[in-house]
Image (cartoon, rainbow over all chains, first blue to last red; front, side, top):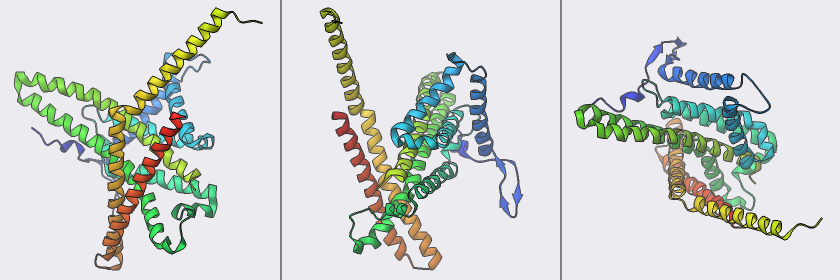
Amino acid sequence: MSNPMEQFEIKKIIPINIGGYDIGFTNSSLCMVLAATIVVCIFAFCLRKRTLIPGVAQNIPESIYEFIYKIVQDNIGKEGLKYFSFIFTLSLFIASGNILGLFPYSFTFTSHLAAVGALSIFALLFNIIVGIKKKKWGYLRTFMPRGIPWPIAPLIIPIEAISLLSKPFSLTVRLVANMTVGHIMLKIIAGFVASLGVLGIVPLFFDSCIIAFELFIAVLQAYIYTILSCIYLSDALHYH
Amino acid sequence: MKVPEDIKALEEKIARAKLSKQQQEDEDNKHSDFSHLTIGVRLGVELASGTIVGAAIGYTLDEMFDFTYIMLLIFTLMGGCAGMLNAYRYIKSINIDEKQGRE
């Protein structure tokens, strides 16, 4: 049985070195490009004939759009709709990355802390910028909620700062852990299919069930990531 | 214009059916095992992530200013507190949602 962690190895496709920094194009980068391209292609294909009464193809992107629009509206409110395009792009990118990872010979970039962490840090910076833009200096109140006595400020401010910084970390860990565990499980069970011979049909059946479940998890995790990003953005806009 | 009695009765029946269906759906959503599992996982991750981020900040400060692990100790404790704070806020938000649902 081959190593189940082998599928997460990053392999260089085009080595690029600029100023001593390795910025090579890897299999992870390729899958990110593919994930983004696939979404754009599906949307462009489905929306090529735009009619007032949508056909089956037009219904797909419209339903996704309305679904995420509703999430943003419910969690952030009307003023959150300004940031809809950001949330929409983020969730589609993650969902397509998760689903793409389920295909054989593909690579799940959402199982890497660096990739998802970068997205989460970007989302956190976006939230901070939006919060500062909206509340100006009042944003600093996030670190010192009203009603807290000043003498305990040295204790509260770092705790609130860590609390803010741990948000992207918890977002990342949840997605990465789910993706990694699912793929390891798939690989281990697939290993039994080959080694058990005729009896391999039993683990094959389990693997098929897990693939279906993983598809569900892939979409669910993208949904959770979207909801949490909305909640954090809502905190930046409304909290205190 | 006067609405006939049988139409009125039918309207009431439809309204009652809609209400009971909505209540049933709300009940299912609230008490499904899956939602409990999600809450549990999220709480665990919130608690752990606060501590890990705190420890990482402490370790970085120690490395930068050569504090011999005092910052690691302080920030790990603070990270634990931040994790608990996040978990507490999350539980509070669930309680508020449930209360609003009941109203």
